[in-house]
Image (cartoon, rainbow, N blue to C red):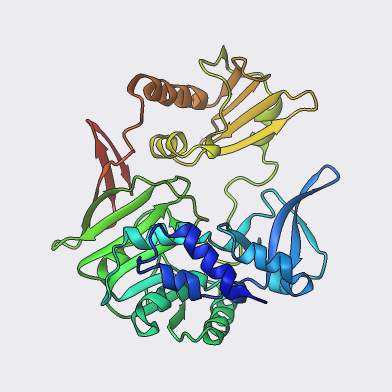
Length: 389
């Protein structure tokens, strides 16, 4: 396999200038070693599924996939692609969510560049497939890199594949939101999303250390520098990013099972409030600014959608407090909206969309971020503020 040429092409199309300190790491790291098998999304009949791809059985496809600037899903629910049977498929949906991947290289680099890594930086990164760890090792040397994951198998196999690539960083199994491996770090870069900034990160950062992470269920990238009081101060990065949320076991705990009573209500009940929405349908998870603002204003909404055979779309919103909304429309027509429970979730969404129309953007863009020593983060801009605690 002529992977060297493919890796250099990836570097040339991902890094703006060849003199960048990230060009050579990209150009010399064998990404295919870290993703010998992966899952791709496909449709079988009327079913949306994950389908296994095996690199060794199709080297040309392996080369194309590994050196494309794209994310390769390596784990679905508790099933790693390494352990799946040839030709196996897994239904997508809530029971078949992706739980680990090799993140697209440009996004890994965006996070690393936001961290402003220097030649002497001691970094802690998240492991996953090990590819991002390999890039950090190629840039800094393995002695300055610590990589963590909650999954013992991921750490084990990443260690083997990193060794094959010539890198021997410190690898540890740990819950990213709990205690970190002993040590002091100049940079902590997380390519999994966390619900709040863990206190352990703030304690592990050295003086003037920097953390870069995304916040779960949003597209927000937080960049913050350690302060003398044990907290941190920074900003929301201009670029948005979406990473899998941190998990604490084999799979994600499901706040909303596939068919809870509230879901049945949202699908079939007549709303306590029935109105016409102000704007055409938007599926919030497909946006980053609406999604992020709504999550900060009303945390914990479960979003679902359905398209009928006639093309009519229905968007659902559910909340653990019993609130629900159902909005249905054809094309760009204004939707008919049914809502029930203690809050009017669709009204909250329309309020934020009106805010966007009037101001031209939402205040989360480039908001200032202040993180207290207890991990509580306050975002603020133009008189608006929100707290993540």
